[in-house]
Figure 1 (cartoon, one colour):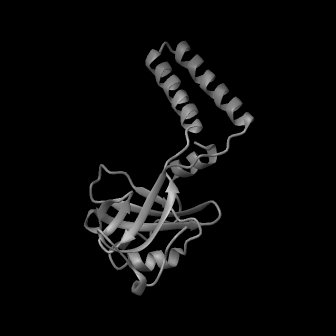
Figure 2 (cartoon, helix red, strand yellow):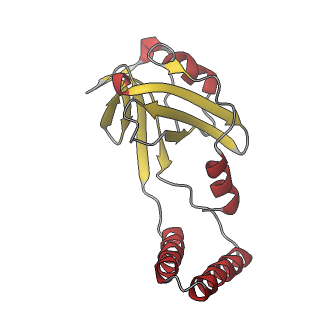
Length: 170
């Protein structure tokens, strides 16, 4: 899954030497049981009834659209993302994000639920990037990234919305 070697064994790439790389799906596709879909349908129906009762057609449209998106997204197979850490920055499917555009990184490692690497960007409009670590050694990744980036040691847990999304299987 990963090609994590010492600095002497770095592979040469278009954006400096590649230190490590691995692939991951663009989003987590949860296995949803029949009861999950029943509860999901009941919640959507309840919100639609509330929207009609409240005479709020825009809310009803948003609920229907969100329900359809979640339903069809669950049926679509996620594409694979190729992730690399190099001397010049990080690469997502060979698109470079240079270290100069990243403000900090942090690792949330609470196995087996959460094993992720996060990046925050100088562009405040760009959301945080999270990369699953799987069975990679977070200490080695941290040591390598510290050469180029500042670590945010204050982040010890995944955010509330991320944990909620994981627990609700969205």
